[in-house]
Image (tube, rainbow, N blue to C red; front, side, top):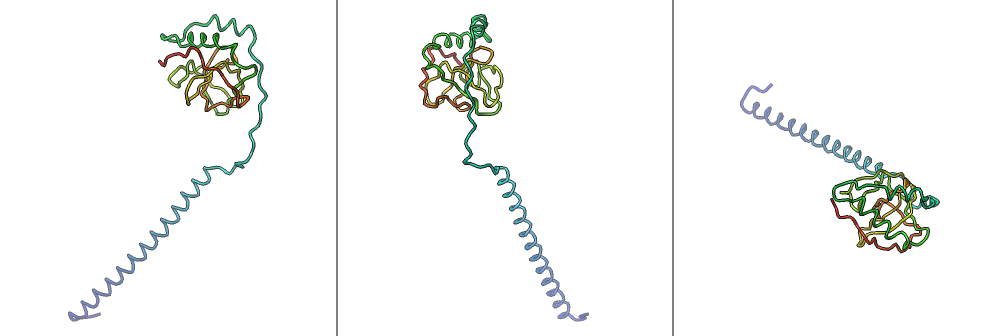
Length: 185
């Protein structure tokens, strides 16, 4: 189209303008894609939060009855589960504190797949998972702010439940501190 030097220069400038326009269009499209992706991420986060009614009251679960004499016989026949005798110490704490707990004090599991332990820490052996709503008689508790409750499990054996995975019934019950607490493994 242009045959002289000025024409070639003008043609080069025109191509540069065209390249700049393409770069602007690409940047604009990238900006739109970024906004769409950000919107999708925000929606995913919000949908993961759930849409339940935050004011909904929890369902009350009636307390269970205390274990029978057969459970006490099973307790006395148990053998230690590890070299440190964690089960033995737990049973001793159970026997020493049974009479001091107010009648009817229970702990109801409020967390899915909560585990009863042979001692008051997650480093102790799991005695089994408990379902939400399981209510067990409370025998004693640990000292301090990170409370664990010594309970009588459904099979009559003693076990420890972390205070954050249960609701104490009655809520303001004063549970005596366990006389014997097993040492961590």
